[in-house]
Each structure stands twice: as structure tokens, then as C-alpha cells.
Length: 113
Length: 115
Image 1 (cartoon, each protein chain N blue to C red):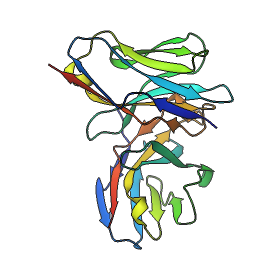
Image 2: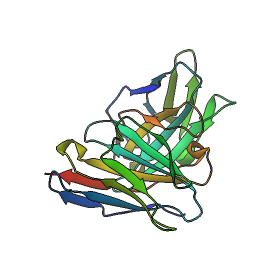
Image 3: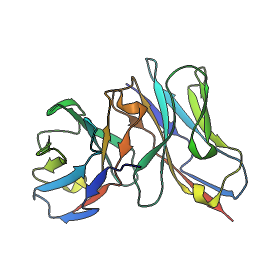
Image 4: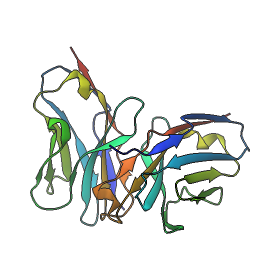
């Protein structure tokens, strides 16, 4: 079975500051890793994914994440955030491309002016 | 961009009542999913559905739950006799391929409140 831990439930930052949202996972098998974003009153939207290949993955809206197998982490980063990045961010894992997603608890990112 | 549509956005029901949550997946998608999030907890997988059959279900998806694709466009989740602990946000999702996690589209959710 897989599990995901998002280490920060709330992350407040100022506009144009860098941000890192942390995600750690545990699994006995190889995994696929995802970050989803949920803006207020909207559904979950795929931000980026790691399926194989390069461990540095770039996603939409200037976000990127790095898969670190030795540390079982998949932290999300953005060098300079905007007010519009305020949202809930979910890390998720699955054991293959068609299986259920196992989500973390979510991190509320609030970008202040 | 195409969207997964869920109705209603909020539903309030009495404990013991049946409730049906409705979803309209993206039109050319073939694989359908329900997830839920109890307030303050993780988003949890409930069930996946393809070709009019359940492909996978979680431990949560017991005999009180059922899914159906009654026509070519709707995908429904029925809870036969709701309990207080069924109160949650329910998300529908769909994908065009069996490798659903490569491109999974979620709806905006139905907030179910059981009183």
C-alpha cells in the first residue's frame, strides 16, 4: 500500500517570494507521483506528474517538482509566486498509471500582497 | 477546456435517506471515478468504472454505495441509506484512457451534508 504525507497544512508567503510545498511518500513498489491544485469552488486540476525519466518535472503555471527516490520525496517548488497561486495543493501517488490515487492531506498556500 | 460537471453543488439530506449524486463526464471519456473528502481529511478513492462495470473499489465502497451510467452522458453515485459519516465533498473524475492518472479530469464536487 502507498501513503502520502504533506508536511505543512498551511503555507503563507508574500507575493514574488519562492515557495516549497513538501510531500513525502511511502510505498513498497515503484510509484507514480502527482501534484494537483484546487482553486476555490473548482475541481482538482493536474499541476504536474512524475511517471518516469527525468526526476525534475515541470508543470503548469511555473511550478516544478523533483522526485527524490532516496528521500522518498516529491516537493513542489515555484521561484516566484503570484496572488493567483493561492489555492489548496494536493500530492498524490499511485502504483501504476491506471490505479487509484492516494492523496496527501493537502497544503493551503496563501499568497499575500 | 472540456469540464466534468457535477450536480448539485450542495446537497443536504436526512440520515437514512437515499441520495444520488450526479456527474456528467467529458463526452469522449470512458473511465470514470468517484473520490470523496471528509472535512479535514484526505481525499479518498471510492470506485472506478469502465464498460458498465466496477473496475476497482475501496474498502469505503460498501453495499450502501452503488454507481451507474444510466445513459450515454451521466455517471451517478447512489448512497442507499445515508449516515452522518457520509458527509463529505464527493468528486467525480473521468479520463479517456485506462492510464487515467496521466490525464484525469475532476469535477468541482458535490458537498453532501447528512443531518
